[in-house]
Amino acid sequence: MSKGKLDLSKLAPQTRLIAAGREQSEHGFISPAVYHGSTILLPDVDTFRNRPYAYARRGTPTSKALEQAIAGLEGGYDAVITPSGLSAISTTLLAYLNAGDHLLVTDAVYSPARHFCDTVLKRLGIETSYFDPGIGSGIAAMIRSNTRLVYCETPGAQTMEIPDIPAIAAAAHDRGCLMMLDNSWSGGYYFRSFEHSCDISLQSATKYLGGHSDVMMGCVTTTKEAWAPLKAAYGAMGLCAGPDDIYLTLRGIRTLDVRLARHMSSAIRVAEWLRGRAEVDTVLHPALSNAPGNEIWKRDFKGSTGLFSIILKPCSDTALKALIDGFQLIGLGFGWGGFESLCSPFTPTRVATAWKAQGPAIRFHIGLEDPNDIIADLKDGFRRLTAAA
Ligand SMILES: *Cc1c(COP(=O)(O)O)cnc(C)c1O
Image 1 (tube, rainbow, N blue to C red):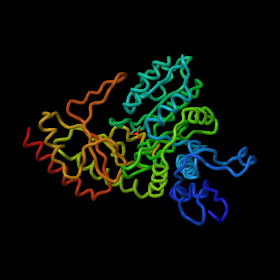
Image 2: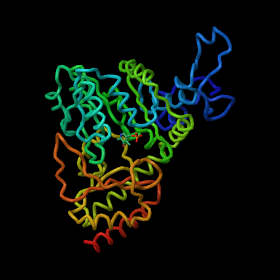
Image 3: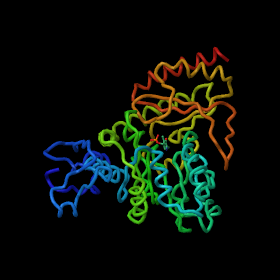
Image 4: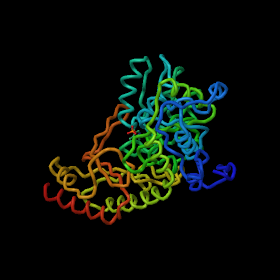
């Protein structure tokens, strides 16, 4: 921007979303240009030796703007952007772990991340143990002399447990381990990872940062102290996201505040309605009073988003299919965080804890539709479920 550098740290979070990364724009344009390129021609040897941009894989003004916006959003030192959320996870794990190291991972982790730990990391001689997301400071007992990293997610993928991140981070730091968090659910906006003692905060930017179901993207932000290994591994692996996707993610960030506010209010509305239904056994939404995780959620979060789960009373698979297959508005699919409502039935993988639900579980993402229309879709669904039972 032309009026000199703003001190973003003095601005409210909502204002930071609007201002971050804008100094990369040129000629008075609000947004940075999208550079489709690989080679960057350098005018002379002196510039060649002191180049601001050398080669598009190593960064462009557009990627720099997105990195700055994400680091500002998360409140960390600096950020890298990766071509997907899963590559943000795999890059982070490879950046900090060596053969012979031990890793602690929440049992509620995003399941493709579990697969990466159990296959690639295992093959490289890195051992993973899973912990109960409700473990809190009890994690101390699982930390070994070779444990390097504790990897958590809040809330847990699908099952929505809210771990006590500050307590887990304190135990990790006590023993010289780094605390890594998947912060996708809060969009980095409603959970301040670095104010809760995390060293590394990553997201599937495919979800709320992109926000329109048209982009795959990931990001990792760290503290100053934790930055160097991540930056080195990221560069070494040759990761780079496409320029249009980078641009779309930056564009999504500008409206994060208003989108999340609507996701929050509509999801609470739908979750409260579901809680009153006879067909529903449990609503797993941490912002509902007396729901699992509500106490810690109130203490640590500034808001909730559109993603939550329910457990139905036991019913036949035919009844479950009748409910879901007939939805008119609520789509059936993965990849939440867009403007549309979605659902997906699930049975979680568990190794350190037991999943005791009797009935089938469904995860919902409540989009930006009028929640009354979503409730009407659900009401019709429960009519079909009852008729099929
Ligand atoms: C979707 C998701 C990921 C993976 O992100 P992609 O962008 O799909 O690779 C990681 N963590 C969580 C919690 C997710 O929901």
